[in-house]
Image 1 (cartoon, rainbow, N blue to C red):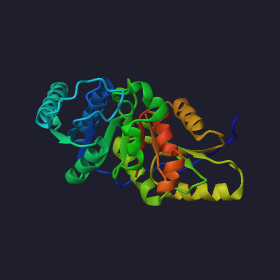
Image 2: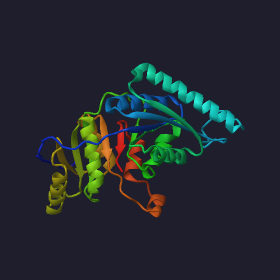
Image 3: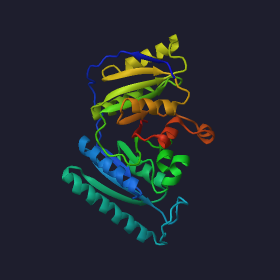
Image 4: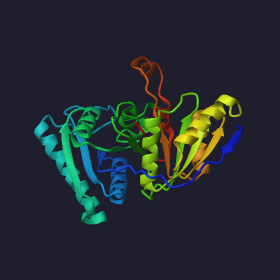
Length: 291
């Protein structure tokens, strides 16, 4: 069992707030994708943001597990994609009313390329995807387009596991690996999200040496950066970051896990999976990758 050290931190109210104007939800119309769209719509309503539904279509299967018949007519595929998007949009509007502006974008191309293009063109503030799409049986082992987007998204990415429904995000766990100091700007963005959600943030700092001076110095630096946000901070050892973080999130009844992906070069990405990408495959709690 890991050793745990708790540090008491200030809890006065943060003076800044991140404003979300545009949320993009990418869907493949799978049951999990549609559930993620419902989650995104409720979040957009709470944040008074507009919602853009995106579907990428192409004339060949991008996943061998897909069994649909693929039309050779790109025009027909565009029409089918657009019709499915409008049907989903109408269903969301029927549930939420006219409060949430919803637009639909059907675009030809590989999903990751289309998503990045829409994010850029629409100046999106947040991308939402389901962790499991059409190929549900392989996502837990090999990942999905959503988990691949962790290293490629230009904006924060909120990943929604199967069977999750929106109930607010008032209790957040933020995982920080003290072996790699967090970027202050990224951490500030994470705090902005927490404040926008009206969250209490429970910070878990994972370290092999929780009691030494270097660790306490790093924790003190994080404590300074967190000044103004209601939170707790825990330093804990753990052989497996994923197991430790997920167990901590469950113990704290978290509605959301936040992680700060580290920059990795192409060779590192080739030979090993990033911590956040792996967590995205394993989590059963919504995960926000803050970039």
